[in-house]
Image (tube, rainbow, N blue to C red; front, side):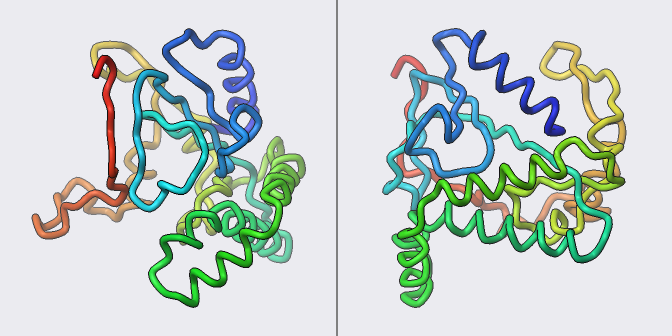
Length: 212
């Protein structure tokens, strides 16, 4: 979501979510270590592999990503990308210190984990304050680290929408969904990958569904 919509959404969720769901942010859950919100189903559990060390509330969730303006001048853009990278590494450090694939990386993340995570939240808030409500041509989610995100995506992809039927209900969807998918996944995004590559990126060590 664009930042203005994200802030409005979180404000409504804090007041109107029923008991089945929980709005998880670093403000509502002291153990949470990411720069974006999640909507959790309360009577569930989802523990991601490698994240067992985290002390945040667990549950089956949907991520909600805020997007801010991407500076059009080169120096401010580089500054924002570097700042977001540093913030993300600090927030990830508790996980990386335990599950990074090499000893050197684990040592590096262990050092980063000594820094207060509030520094990272402050950095992401600074980006949101400076660029969250601007009218730059491109926007990006500073919580992501993909190459595509550092270049940004077209603002119109998020702001221009259309009606679409999803699971039997009418919802608002991106008007430029084809362009978005091609940008992130390639022009042949409708082609299935080989069976040998069809593996989940985020595996779980434990999942509990409602009523179990």
